[in-house]
Length: 487
Image (tube, rainbow, N blue to C red; front, side, top):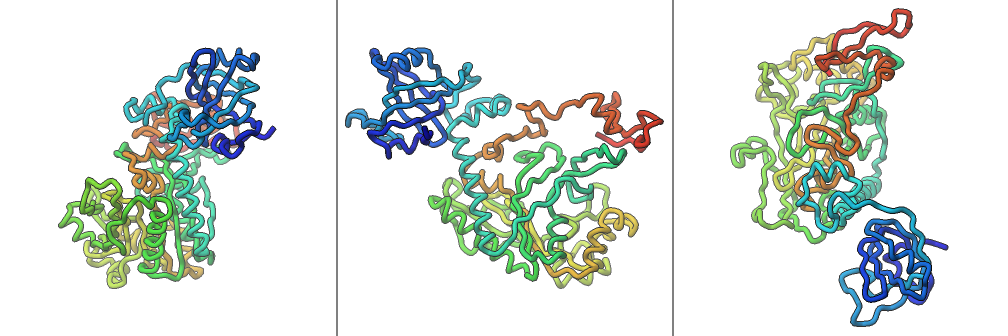
């Protein structure tokens, strides 16, 4: 017999159907036993009466969160017993057969509330229980809808969704890389991608012209507020455009997203205001200002663009570093200064950040698309030509074979969804988030690995908690020695 989703029960009055799910609540009135059965689609009241002895006797033992399968007839409730608060409130299931699929222990915490009163680390340890609550289930459903909207919108604009590698090369892009040791190439390491930045630019070199990806990005960052070591990015790149072309497209996508999925929200101003970095710092003392006219209105969305960022700034050692990423192009009037490495502090970049209610939700730019300009950025930062060739030779070489002007954006899907849903942090819209310091309390990761695994990877962990590749067996053709590397 076909299993019906609970919310379809109202369509089958008088019919015998099968439903299954979790026991949400059990209660008794006299000799009659009631349970509210819950599945992803909703809740259905189910009735056990003594005349159906076998199912009635089994129902005596039911407890909350047990998983059951029920067969019975859908009947109308009496008028005074209708529950207007649920979709199936006009009907109930008169149970004829009960199969217990699994039993459940007492849950570590209640799931009837929104969960915000519970210690977050406890919720994360038992995340599979936490996700039972209605709020989080709905958050994940809305996240899916946002992702689908992005895919549909960009596909209609003739973008191609392309997956890029998860194992790549370690290059300086602003944060520390997560590194992965190679078993087959001892002493060498892959890096997990901080973003698909280089790959999407290489796709522009390949003539793809319009690319996007809902991409996983990983950054080994120190604990920083509302950040995760891994996050999801709406990643887009386009060829043969100018800055205005891309900003118009992305702005149009955000407006349409709000109109379709968050129609109860109001965008403060369209088109989105554009604020220079200089003006933002002088007026708001922030490069991600909250420009809402009424900050008490939870349904007010104040988008704005921040533009005209400085290309370079001094790091802690007094050396020049990029403010956005090294692949950004300078504004046209500063192109010559970059090539000649003059007036470094005055060079402005084509970077554009999109900000919502005081949070940066994305950043992009037009890109350097000539080998000379890209090399000049790294020379300003103090790299030698040999170091540039080692770290970015693949990009320099690719640009020598004909590359169109191009630009794009990386935008945080987690943050966009959290802000539009009014959630306090991105962990509330991620199925299995980590703590601020990168721990997975549910899986207990990171964790040690076995001596056998370490040996296969030619890695030894010393007492100072550092990791080094080392020769384990001089007879092994794959054994090597290399310098100690911090863990």
